[in-house]
Length: 240
Image (cartoon, rainbow, N blue to C red; front, side, top):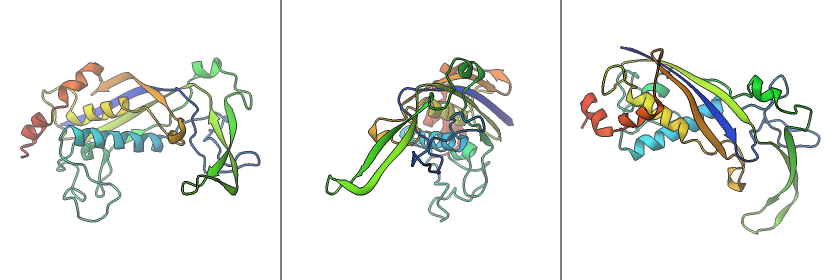
């Protein structure tokens, strides 16, 4: 059976937020990632990494079969080089493993037109810089020649979406969200921090699901929690 998922969600920044661009500047050593319109955005690759990690932790906590490490090229996990149609983990089934990519597509999170219309988008209005020093963890003192500045965005909202296309996923009842998509949705809702400087109170967010469509049909967000039972999943997959 073929399965498709479309999830649209909103990320609200609750604190100063920094997603590095990898570039430096004259007045800032750590710049916020910006698009062609000079507006901040969250890369889809960053969202994919955070959500996958959330899904892996949730899956393990709920006693689903253990997912593989996509960066581990050894054979330490039996499913590392197994076709996705045969893997045991519901996370691997949609995110992929070392053998096969999962058909999940994460779009960059951007300010929508309504949000942009209500913001002052002049240079410096959305982003501010903070001067900081590098403190030695061992000595507890500032390191010489380690004064730098970091850009942070102000509080704002981003919207984005995920689309996925898969085969052979398992669900309790036909027409209901498969276990894999339920874990994915829960992994999105678990996002409360993202990107850099989380250790000093940056990057706090609130995540809200706006739309879930499974096989083109609107789904109720509350129903995802009905399919987070690892015992039901193991029974359907005929796993020990």
